[in-house]
View 1 (cartoon, rainbow, N blue to C red):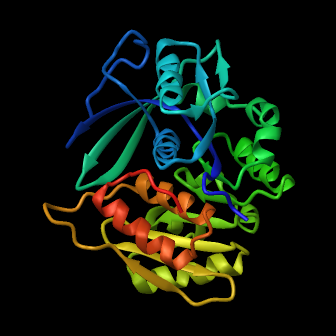
View 2: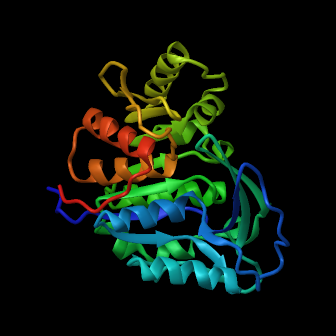
Length: 291
């Protein structure tokens, strides 16, 4: 039985994000004195959104001991995200990414791989008691492949279901797919996982069937701006279209992932959660609510 205040662990890279509309602003990644960055990366945005929805959120990642890392942790803590178990490395600077936003798509370019690329098991091992009490673990694959796989094993040890977003699909092996309860991927990521392009709904349906064959519990393929196609073991593919939004549609996968995590951890049915999350992603809305 889920409590109203879901407890969710988010595992992924924490980044200093330099962004601009319509292009990338280049910045010296080594300049930790710069205040022109935002605490970012998909995992950070998901953690912040879940906290604003009223969840108790635990964040597991790795940052440097530089100004950028300190600012990321401060921002998360200020928004009631637990950062007690975040690993800090003196020998690495915090990961730096640049983001460009075209028509609502989230496109990232790593400038400096930094601390997230050397994340160790320390964060997950020290947080075992906390993980054991969670309703869901959300894992982004932009951490070392070994740590990504270890995070799934830790969650399963405590019978905690995992939701995976393969934003670096090369870290997700075919053998790991059978360990994933909920897989959420955009068409590019889904295509990388199955070794074939996913261009339309027919391709998406074939892709979903392949994920089921590989043992994924439930798979969702996202077409940004259009909606979500999904399938669960023993079921048929379904489609949750995104509504038309007045004033132009802006789609964010981080909002979609956050809503899915919140709704599913609260016991909402998969198909219903996809419809609500698609509407939220299309409108970029993140709000507090109780289930």
